[in-house]
Image 1: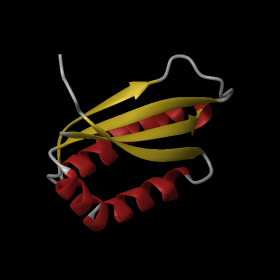
Image 2: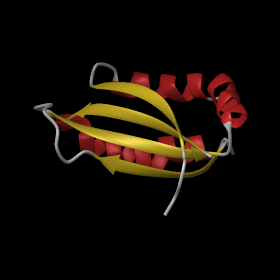
Image 3: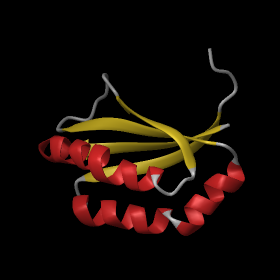
Length: 103
């Protein structure tokens, strides 16, 4: 299993709108692709970015083939929607992690 991790730094003045949009629009659209098994949103409690909040959105995916299919077929359009809505108000980076053990 893999975790597709998206870390987002979002301006505080749009944070509540962003979080609502993520919960009710973006993440449901991502999950509707059928690629991911589950998803969770986390908020960093300690950081040094005044005027912003940092979140991670972690998607559980079966393997790299499924993730690559998502990246090729769905990610560009979904990321474009995010960019158009919050342009200049966020920064994001993506990582892929192997789930080694779950307790």
